[in-house]
Length: 296
Figure 1 (tube, one colour):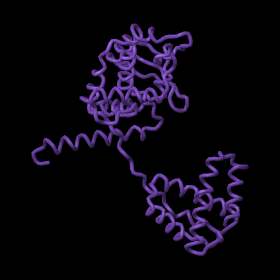
Figure 2 (cartoon, rainbow, N blue to C red; figure 1 turned 30 degrees about the vertical axis):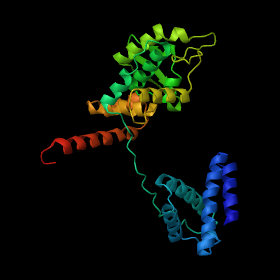
Figure 3 (cartoon, rainbow, N blue to C red; figure 1 turned 180 degrees about the horizontal axis):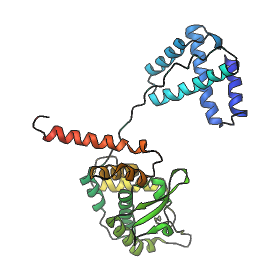
Figure 4 (cartoon, rainbow, N blue to C red; figure 1 turned 60 degrees about the vertical axis):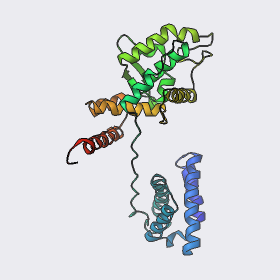
């Protein structure tokens, strides 16, 4: 079986052209399976492997604490290996074919309560360049639901405050137009007028948000800014850029926005990705029902 694994990895590298990291992932999974088969079932030949053996091995991995998402990855590696063996007539049949992937639990995204979001935004009241910059960053995250990378790379030439929109490049190099609300427009305009000119230096580019040295802010620094401002606002929650993106979508939905519109604003390629927010809103509605309905 080990020699067949070697042949399979060679096939992935030469005929499929898959990355080294992917090859290593597949090898680790198959080597672990081969070792278990030899130690626990005294099986060393691929032809001797049965569906029940694979099922037992995957169940053992679950008992060892393997997450469902990781178990799906391991099952995929096992399936493509045995499918390859069967297609090359190196064994008869595919014992992994009947095995269904484990269901991955969907973790609901955390969100800020609307009052907490307002508390965070309005807590930044300073008139210094950095205060105005940080207020504009927070307002834009919450107003437009931008990803961290989208905000980092946002540029002046892609911003239209008069009409209230910003053009960003999202995942897969896809460009989209995001609305910028009145509060965010005001904060950004104040920063561009009274804050950014103080940060500009000879090496500054057209990035909207600049560091104290006039350079493009890094993702790590923006995360730090969000966390620091949340702490200063008295929020005990772990606030990060993606939490503001989740809050943006959840609050839109709770106020009646159409899911398809939210999908477009977030830049989701698939509506199923956006549908997670319907679960968040349903959870909120259930909490309200339990709290206020006399027969809940």
